[in-house]
Amino acid sequence: KKIKITQEGCNLLRAKIYQDTIEAQRYQKQMEMAAQQKAIADQQALQSIQNMQNTLPKTTYCNQIGTQTICNSY
Image 1: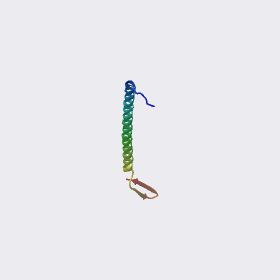
Image 2: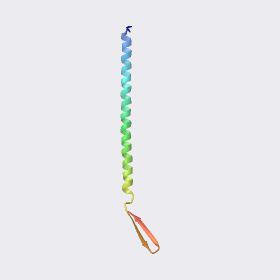
Image 3: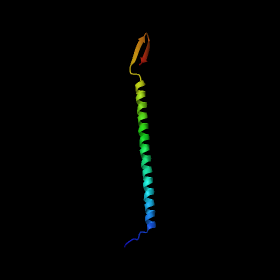
Image 4: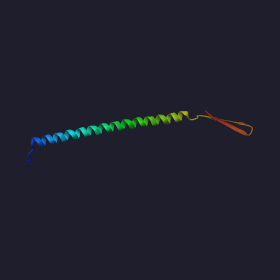
Protein backbone atom coordinates (compact mmCIF):
# COMPACT_ATOMS: atom_id res chain seq x y z
CA LYS A 1 0.00 0.00 0.00
CA LYS A 2 1.54 3.29 -1.06
CA ILE A 3 1.38 6.35 1.12
CA LYS A 4 1.06 9.66 -0.65
CA ILE A 5 3.29 12.33 0.85
CA THR A 6 2.23 15.89 0.22
CA GLN A 7 4.53 18.89 0.20
CA GLU A 8 2.83 20.11 3.37
CA GLY A 9 3.43 16.76 5.09
CA CYS A 10 7.03 16.79 3.93
CA ASN A 11 7.52 20.32 5.27
CA LEU A 12 5.99 19.39 8.63
CA LEU A 13 8.22 16.34 8.88
CA ARG A 14 11.28 18.41 8.00
CA ALA A 15 10.37 20.97 10.68
CA LYS A 16 9.88 18.21 13.27
CA ILE A 17 13.25 16.64 12.42
CA TYR A 18 14.91 20.06 12.68
CA GLN A 19 13.24 20.72 16.05
CA ASP A 20 14.28 17.29 17.37
CA THR A 21 17.84 17.89 16.19
CA ILE A 22 17.99 21.26 17.97
CA GLU A 23 16.62 19.71 21.17
CA ALA A 24 19.13 16.85 20.97
CA GLN A 25 21.98 19.33 20.52
CA ARG A 26 20.74 21.40 23.47
CA TYR A 27 20.54 18.27 25.64
CA GLN A 28 24.04 17.21 24.57
CA LYS A 29 25.38 20.67 25.46
CA GLN A 30 23.70 20.51 28.89
CA MET A 31 25.26 17.10 29.53
CA GLU A 32 28.69 18.38 28.53
CA MET A 33 28.32 21.39 30.82
CA ALA A 34 27.17 19.18 33.71
CA ALA A 35 30.18 16.90 33.17
CA GLN A 36 32.52 19.90 33.17
CA GLN A 37 30.94 21.28 36.35
CA LYS A 38 31.28 17.87 38.03
CA ALA A 39 34.92 17.63 36.99
CA ILE A 40 35.58 21.09 38.45
CA ALA A 41 33.77 20.19 41.69
CA ASP A 42 35.70 16.91 41.94
CA GLN A 43 39.00 18.75 41.40
CA GLN A 44 38.10 21.34 44.05
CA ALA A 45 37.17 18.59 46.52
CA LEU A 46 40.45 16.79 45.85
CA GLN A 47 42.40 20.02 46.37
CA SER A 48 40.56 20.63 49.65
CA ILE A 49 41.42 17.14 50.86
CA GLN A 50 45.05 17.57 49.83
CA ASN A 51 45.21 20.96 51.59
CA MET A 52 43.79 19.41 54.75
CA GLN A 53 46.31 16.57 54.59
CA ASN A 54 49.15 19.03 54.06
CA THR A 55 48.16 21.03 57.14
CA LEU A 56 47.79 18.02 59.42
CA PRO A 57 50.61 17.53 61.94
CA LYS A 58 53.33 15.24 60.63
CA THR A 59 55.22 14.52 63.85
CA THR A 60 54.40 14.67 67.53
CA TYR A 61 57.07 15.15 70.20
CA CYS A 62 56.35 14.56 73.87
CA ASN A 63 58.48 15.73 76.80
CA GLN A 64 57.97 14.62 80.36
CA ILE A 65 58.84 17.18 82.98
CA GLY A 66 58.32 15.69 86.40
CA THR A 67 54.80 14.33 86.48
CA GLN A 68 53.64 16.47 83.55
CA THR A 69 53.86 15.39 79.91
CA ILE A 70 53.76 18.05 77.21
CA CYS A 71 53.25 17.03 73.58
CA ASN A 72 53.65 19.21 70.51
CA SER A 73 52.70 18.28 66.96
CA TYR A 74 54.39 19.80 63.92
